Length: 447
Image: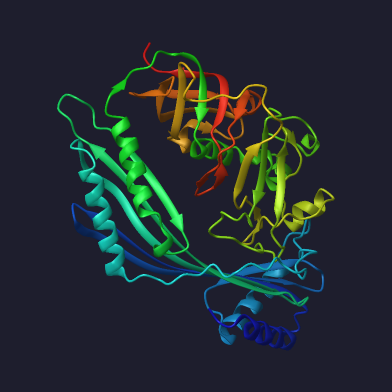
């Protein structure tokens, strides 16, 4: 990507020549390389470069036009500015997007999150060895049909006519392993694991192999579970899956669009057990892909969403914050329209629990490790869900894999029915979260 200060300089010169007084430019670029293997041989190697530049221009009537491009040399910027300027006369007349009031505020200084990019042969060799060790972990494990090792080099920038110039870059490396078993007279069983780091040298490959093997082996001796109401323990990943599906609860844009389970008056109300607290924290120390500013140039920050069960804040762009008379939170994504999304969840205990619960002592508890069919089995606007899951029936530390079952309920009731939030946090792609205990959820298994 071009030098951002240089880009800012010639964009300003071109805008002045075109008679454009107000504009902003947001851009992002991703270079990625990924490999997959199959039975000790390379299966697929992919390399891609994806970039997107969004240019917005406001005219003398203060209506806005927007265009996108992938060309950021002077000719490309000039064409984009002209196109956006022409489009501005057809822009919306109500709730017109504007600069973030914080677009020129200082951002938090963090150390660059960059690492050496590994060569493709090294990626393939690492993944082949991981596949080999996972298959060797147990005679029943015959293949690792889904696997991948990928690297991404990401950078993004924001600049505007008010003097904002922001840029940052970081790397991520990720691995996933999903193994499959074959045993005579038994159904195939599968389980997976995922790891993320800044670079291959920091990636916990051994931990990924070990977790995938342990989970897969634990599913070999499976049983049906009777239909009924159970005390349920959600793994960190499973709880964050649900939280993400129903994130319209605290998404200001969804609330203003009336596509949410909340309303503007929901702030300050108890929506969950007082044992639960949730923040969105782009700058969390365990967030591999920290971002110090959003698509509108607003500095990111730690935003309390739920505090001791109370809905304390929505996630905002500059536009939603203005309409709801508050401050942006640094959660805007800029494009043809501005959207809002979380960065990195931090879920942790709220008020102290009256009783400490443990899987080593619990009886007849369902431990849900991973939820499936989220796109089809959850209704985000109604709050309801009915989802197949992978998990175990746990009795005093002994876990028995569940053959096949679904968990159903209303997410709002799930939040209010939380009876324990463990203290140990687990890192997932979507954030950090402990195991969450919920009382009396409907499990459909054997009739």
